[in-house]
Image 1 (cartoon, rainbow, N blue to C red):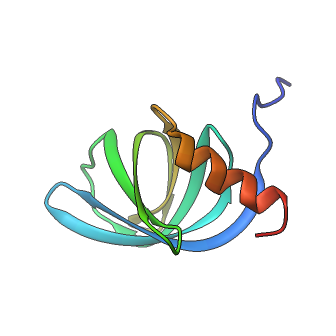
Image 2 (image 1 turned 120 degrees about the vertical axis):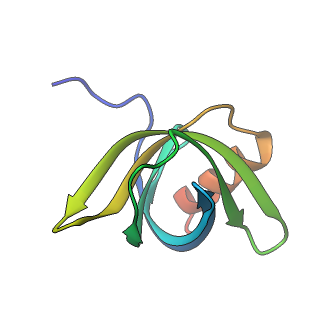
Length: 103
């Protein structure tokens, strides 16, 4: 089994994103410098493979460009997304590192 390049850090914070003209809110269950796993209430299919996740750090709203790498389906709807960060900004990296130090 291949190890991940970045350590996953348990988290629990709200993010927002839009997909196919619908607005969604989700909870980030874990985060790394390379990606996030986001739990949502219910997402409709089809969905865009490239999204912009809005992360409220408390001092600013980060716009994080991502690519959807994985989706989970429960019953008749999609409720989890695994996303890869396209181009992590310096502020995003600082935000992730704050979880390592006990945010």
